[in-house]
Image (cartoon, rainbow, N blue to C red):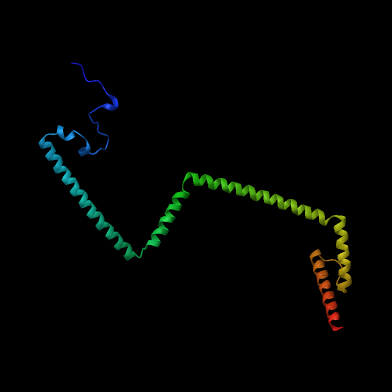
Length: 184
């Protein structure tokens, strides 16, 4: 007699998958003796009882945990804060975070150097403008105005003082003109 040919997907016998429930396997109980089935039923009952006992122990441990936290004054907000802190520490210790942080730091340093360079260029341009003949002429005119308005003060000083003095003199003249107009 010839052995049966493999029918592929049309095979009638079931092949149990890894982790498949033994009771769900068709035809499996038929191959076990009555004694083996009784033994498995006893083992099944024992395992179910152990699971129930472990569930009760877990529930008791969870109640004990809540009681300890209550006595220590640990509330949900504090737990959340601790969890967030721990999560942040976990994130910052990852390679991806470290690489990203290094990259951003380098980018920041390059941006800082670029801004410093731009600042230097602007400072140089201001120095060039201040040393130009047009600016020197303007500065002389402001100093002359200051000496006319200020009177006894010596000519010179820094440009900021000259501008402040000229602005004060202009403001004083404007107030004097307004007062004169109001009296007439």
